[in-house]
Length: 111
Image (cartoon, helix red, strand yellow):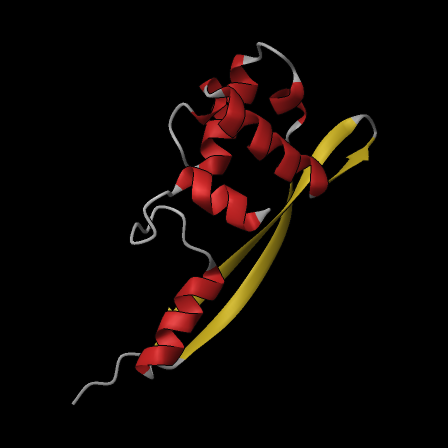
């Protein structure tokens, strides 16, 4: 699914608009730059994204995909919602999307 999202939201492989933490770490490893990572997990209420015609849901989907008007493109919307649905749980009638943010801090060697 990640590759389908990458293809859809960043068709030009040289683009950095859809870059995963693994991409960044792989590049840092290949250049010999040291780094440390930290992860933060949150649950985002995405219930509105699944309500047809919800302006709040459309804005949230665009924000989550970091793509303007992704919610207006039927194929992009369906793909993003499928990904969100697979990574969500339902709690008290709310759809909660598990979002993991990884922070990467690279070290610069000063000579």
